[in-house]
Image (tube, rainbow, N blue to C red):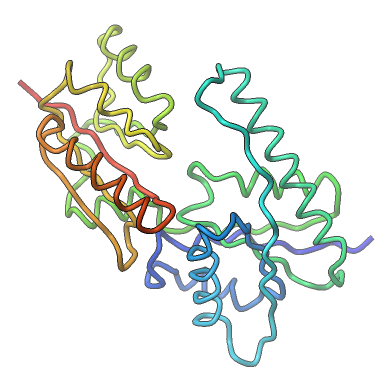
Length: 265
């Protein structure tokens, strides 16, 4: 049985300038790029991946970009921890099945590439899905890191994410309030809290108890339509909420990330 080569390539947070020399070299080896087709509202993301291929894959290297319809994911809002984990597992299984069907139809010598927004190690399912593919097919996997959204956020705002000697806590919008509350009750210092995947801006729930917290927020970080806001949470959150809703309506999708730094009295 032949072993299929798979490259999982971090391509940064939106700007082609985020593509590293290592990532560019890996792009040049790929014969078939598999990208998730998430519908018309996110065609821009597929187009951006295509433009990166056009820029970094040598003109004399033939390649193909295959858009694979992304399975529908059920709603998360009403799920408890166990239900949420099962929903994600089911979604990953459906993704794996879709990709396996495509990969099985490719020539065995074809190098397959997955282009990962940001870095494959942070809140992205691609490595897990590729591992699942490896349980079905013989594969050799190479992972290339990329610039993450929170790295790009810090650079865009010109800030260091942590104070001297303090930690950085990375979490999701789903977990933010619980993480923040439990740390406070236990007397733990989370340091700066970086929040990803927060479609509901749960930081609004912290205004009553931590109004002087500093927020650094960004949408489409690294892309031409980048928007940034920063300041005291209680002073800028209403503007951020309104702006995020307007951007989502305008583009049909929005990617944002933010960092919360507690005040020191």
